[in-house]
Image (tube, rainbow, N blue to C red):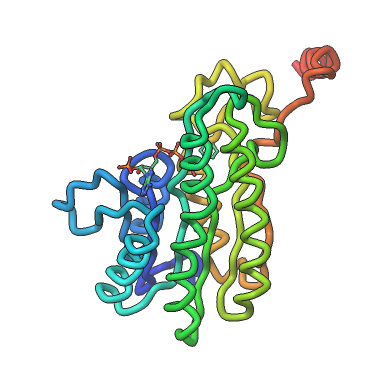
Length: 246
Ligand SMILES: NC(=O)c1ccc[n+]([C@@H]2O[C@H](COP(=O)([O-])OP(=O)(O)OC[C@H]3O[C@@H](n4cnc5c(N)ncnc54)[C@H](OP(=O)(O)O)[C@@H]3O)[C@@H](O)[C@H]2O)c1
């Protein structure tokens, strides 16, 4: 049996209406899964999309119930909805800080709680993935609340993995800059792979972690960041090493 065949599996992707989430949804659909995505501004004309603001626990519960009712099961939840505007920590408003932490940390907890309630009743259990960020593993100047929330999200995955094993596996992806959101030239000298990730590469990592190939992987963080970030104080060394390989 092909472990990457998701036929008959039901998947929810939060914030799957555009960006990385849309790529993840496409990848699971291409692998045969039934997929439901949500966004705050979803039109509702597409059968695979529901309008839901995941920061509201009632809407988060409604999203999971819609998927479970429609598909009769729920196998995979991808907590992808997230982000936050750049703002100096010294002057950003308390409201902005609260909203960013709500979206990137509290909302995934709400949606995961609802998903676990369905998954734990299934003999085959389920998988929950958190779309995290390198911003949560190093200082995140300009997006301090976002970085702190993502650090919390990575940690949250480990706690949920411990509480909800063995039926439900919970992992996070520590994602580096993704092509649509950054100018390639900006990261070409910082990221060892020399380019940002393609959204499809984040989606591939989700397929892998959701598949039986990762059946014993829970409470883990998978780095999808092209080798991380070359330390700025070693820039000269990088340039020398880089030239040496040419
Ligand atoms: N882009 C990058 O370089 C990068 C790097 C590392 C990690 N990440 C992470 O990857 C994830 C996706 O990022 P992206 O760049 O693809 O984002 P994006 O293009 O801004 O898309 C965000 C998606 O989430 C939805 N969304 C936002 N707030 C929501 C809410 N409260 N409830 C429900 N849906 C909501 C949006 O739809 P609506 O606006 O209609 O609600 C949209 O579908 C985020 O968690 C982000 O932190 C991104």
